[in-house]
Length: 215
Image 1 (spheres, rainbow, N blue to C red):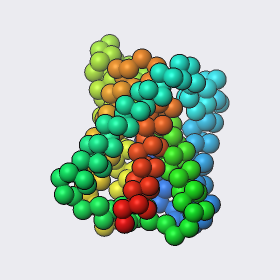
Image 2: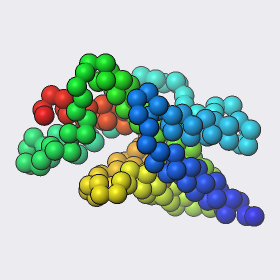
Image 3: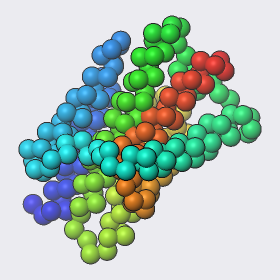
Image 4: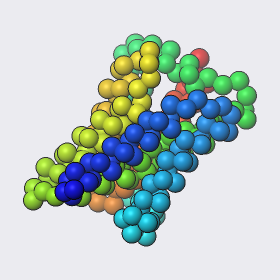
């Protein structure tokens, strides 16, 4: 098996696992179980298969810089996909209804879930593992490899958000967001899965806050 086929096989196997686990309907605290399971698999792959010392591809190096980049990414996505459409362009905020909760305890739990698992957790999967593996594709043109890695990881990220009967525009938003995170990973020094994870988690948490303030 060539290195290229091997990497693609690994990537799509992990994505298939993500698609399988995230379709499992769980309630209460168990909703985080699929994220934990997939991240555990990725950690094992990194440790025992790829022989890497950083199983989650997270780094606290230059944390201040990472936080600044994450804040900038959060500003861009929140303005482009939430604030401007809802407050200035007249788009209906009805999609925020899914974030409506009835108790403070539930709100706190969802906030943690959205930030750590939907945010940082998904970035560990899509930018921290899938994109990183695609960047290892054999190709003398590293720029071309980077574009390929960013586009494929964004496409898989979008597909992971597919829900039968769901709003198809959210798939487009997920794809564009994935491209933005991928471009940041490629072009901004020190931008890794933790950086995009903080931006992703902050954006998802903002939806929760707005869903309970506006509706």
